[in-house]
Amino acid sequence: MSSLQISLAVIGGLVLAGVVAYNAWVTRRSAPRTAREAGQEADGAAGAAPVFDDTRPATSDAGAHERIEPVLGGGPFDEQPPAAAARSDGEFGQAPSMVPVTLSHVVNPPEKKPGLDALIDVITPLLLETEVSGDALLAALPGTRRVGSKPFAVEGLSEATGEWESPRLGQRYRALQAGVQLANRAGPLNDIEFSEFVVKAQAFADAVGAAPDFPDMRAEVARARELDAFASGHDAQLGFTLRARRAAWSPGYVAQNAAQLGFVAGALPGRMVLSGSSAGQAPILSLAYDPQAAMADDPELSALREIALSLEVTHVPRSEQPFVRMRQAAAALAEAMDGVVTDDAGQPLSSDTMDGIGADLESLYDALDSRDLSAGSPQARRLFS
Image (tube, rainbow, N blue to C red):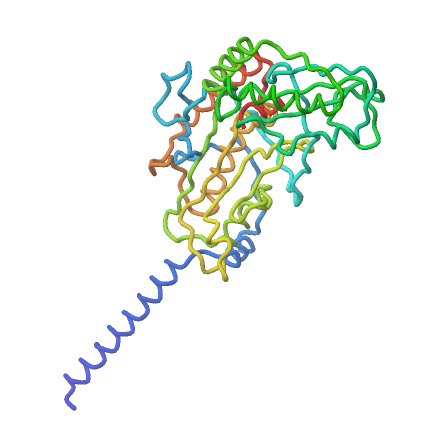
């Protein structure tokens, strides 16, 4: 073999080796990042868990339900920057220097079911001649606790506490009331639903020996429409989409990074939540990704290229500073996982846009407070459901 042939063979071998090495490198870069890799990176960085601190500037590549784009609109605040939520209005003031987050491994238990409230319910007194047992009331309740798309409820006045409550075994009641919700996200109570409420409440009253005193249907339906109009203009659900810049993520990698910010596993596959500070409070934030990837035989082989971070504005108390925490969580996850925060169309959200959203939310909170429907209150959570 001549020296030329030997040289060509050596060069060919080197080229082949280079191609193989390049393909291996590309394959490794395109594989989803796993929780094991995140742990190794954290060890190498002498890792302290991230905290929500808005003294660090939010990334300019920052932040969407239905999904609703993360700028508010659709009510009396339609003249907003172009990236926002339908059925909302609002503003949010200056953020604090630090929002502490406690890592929790247990989602808070549900709170006691809120009772009927004249603000958002039609309430009908059921007049009794003699006291009746809770056992009899429970036996007489209708099989379904809904009237059309609205919740239906019966309550008794507790002699022990002096408060209205759902009937309980072993208790006795001298006063009863029935009610149906005036409005929810399905719309206002209409004539047909009011008539169905009358039929259901009358049947219950007959069974327990009570006499109902129904309010005027026209007045209540009109009140339902007015409440629905207010709710339609002040509902807000915000969402950011976090997209991978380069390598995809595995579900475990996402969960590991989110857990460092205080998120815990939710009830559904592919969902994590940031719990509120009070027992029974709705989650402050929700993080969601493809549930099929979460349920895969080997989730570490599933590739995620985006996750969704969402805030149910009307369900979370203003005191929790939910938008500040949402913005900080998005920025922290984007930095930790090499991602970019965008709207649903994939457009990066700038700091100015995020500031505008935060400003709008403050007016929304003020408007809800003025109607005694403060964000996170039992009445607001029922109305905006």
